[in-house]
Image (cartoon, rainbow, N blue to C red; front, side, top):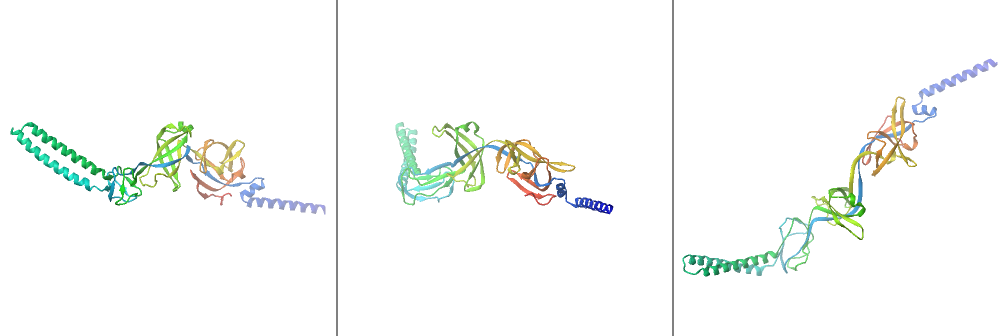
Length: 375
């Protein structure tokens, strides 16, 4: 009786061990690891890219035209003709406004007639002196009359020129401030003329940055009118004086504006970039911190699987979602970017998604052999 009971117990134990062996053989690798007291973690990985970084000084600036002038008249008179429209592109020397010139035109006709008569008289005097009919003084007198008549013509031509208002340089005419027949005086604004093919961007920085900014440095500017665009330029001049009240120095940068998208007077945010360099970079989601140390997990491939290895790194500047790595990583290293909060140094991992990184962060991802990405 006792022997029969013993044999039953042995048979049950044998059957149980056999079942455990079969179940282990049929279970997935992750469940098998859990039977061993371990767990294979599902993670997403990415290769470390090289990203461009720079030390940046930020400021606010005001856009100014390359050349700007208020069009005005030199003399007081009424407007007889307007040859431009508001917002029109004009060339250098183009006639914008003509003032009434009736009196001057009549005076010019009279002066030219007088000049022609004086020149004929000079011709006769020259012939008579050559034949010794009249003394030399007669020729001198005729010559003086011609010179006076010529000077009179030049004077009236200058007065007529003052009644023609021309564009001093090529540019865009602003809003018209006068009307046909209106009386204008010297200093009265007719319109503004701006050459905005090149924008001069003036901004100020504290004097402590004076040693790190210089002519030729690249700048990047943005405006609320085009929030998704960056306008690049270069520093042209640094002011020769520091404001004694604000303790700041004025910097002038130049930005090409051939398409006239930027307008004088716009407020722009400016970034002065210096010490530009390319360094390995990682997304903030890949970082873990303990006390004053920062870590990432690098994927280590071995014959018996893939494992997470903790690596201490030194960080630099942040640019968007990416952080500069000064030491501890090289471009191309594969790091864990998702699921880092659930793994430890030496943990076995299963790659569920391969990500691609650039300066903006994650660009794209493809499913790995393990299926869905880690959450």
